[in-house]
Amino acid sequence: MSVDEKLRTIAERIKSHSSAMLTEEAVKTSVVLPFLAALDYDVFNPNEVIPEFTADAVGKKGEKVDYAIKLDGNIRILIECKPITTNLDKVHLAQLYRYFSVTAAKFAILTNGRTFHFHTDLEAPNKLDERPFLTFDLSDMQAQIVTELRKFSKGEFSIEGILQSAHRLKYTSAIKKEITSLMEAPSEDFVRLLVANLQMGRFTAAVREQFTPMVKAAFREIIRDSVQARLSTALADTEVADIAAEVPQVGDEEELVTTEEEREGFMIVRAIVRDILKPARVVIRDQKSYCGILVDNNNRKPLARMHFNRSIKYIGLFDGDKEDRVKIDTLDEIYDLADRLRTTASAYVEPVS
Image 1: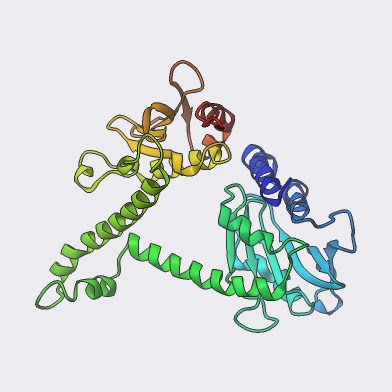
Image 2: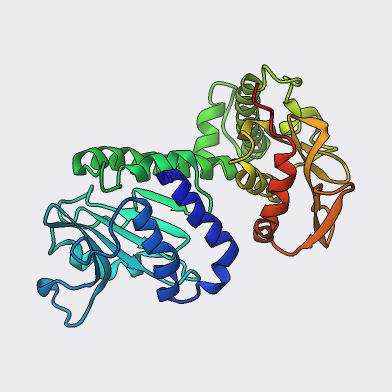
C-alpha cells in the first residue's frame, strides 16, 4: 500500500472508532503507531521509534515524551499524544518544549489522534515555536497534506527540505487565517481601504454600515466565481459543463441560501466518496425544501440530500430504489453512513474504455 492509502485507512478508523479512543493509550495504538508505520518507520524497533523517551538534561525527574524518532543516530522527531477529546493548546507543548532544547530534534508533533500539530524552530534556533507550521485533521486527508507528510517519511526525510516547506506553510496558514477573519467580519480599516476610491467624502459610520455587507458579499462572489471556473473546466468533457448551481447565484440568494452547515455536510460527503469519484464530479445544488448532492450536476444521479432546514435533520440516501431519510443529530454522524454513500457512488463510476 502507498503512504496515501495507509493514511486513508487510518482516517477511516478514526471516523468509525473515535468513540473508543478516549484514552491516551488508545490513541497511541490505534492511530499514532499506525501513522508512523505508514511513514515507513519500524515501530517495533526501539532504536528507531523510542517509546517513553527521556532526556537527562530536562531538569524534571521522571518526565517523558511519548515517542522519539531516531534517524542516523540522532533524535529528529518528538511526539506527544493526548486523548482524542483533548483540545490541543500551547499548554500541552510543555514537555516537547523542554525536550526540544536538549536534544537534536528538529520537529515536534502534538496530537490527540485526530488533530496533528507539527512544530519546529523557525522563530529562534533550538527553541520550539508555539505556533505550528502544519495543522490538519487526519480523519479528513487532503491531497496537499499527504504531499507534506511524505516529506516526513523515513525514505524522504530531509531537514533542509522540510524546513523550507515549514516556513512557507506557517506563514501561508497565518495569512489564510487573517483573510478568513476579514471575510467573515471585515474590519473598519479594511472596509475603509477598499472603498477609499469608490466614494467621496468622509468615511462615516453610515458609510461603514453601508459598505461592510457589500465587502462580505464581494468576497463570497469572488470565491463562487473561482469555484465555478475551476469546476467548469474539470467538467468540460462531461454531459453537463455548466455547474453554476454548485453555489447559489447572487440573484437567487433571497430565495435559496446555502448555509454553512449544508456546505460542511457537502464537503464531508465529497471527502467520503473521493476515492471512488473525482471530487469535481460531486456537486451541491440547493433547492427550496432540501440541499441536493449530485454526481455530474445531474438530477438523475443523486448521491445524497441534506434536509437541514428544519428542527430535526435528515440525510437522504439513495442506495436503494427510493430515498431513505436517516435522522442525524450532528454532521459527524454522516461518517457513520460512509459505506452506504460509497455504495451509491460506485453506481456512478465511469466505465473504463
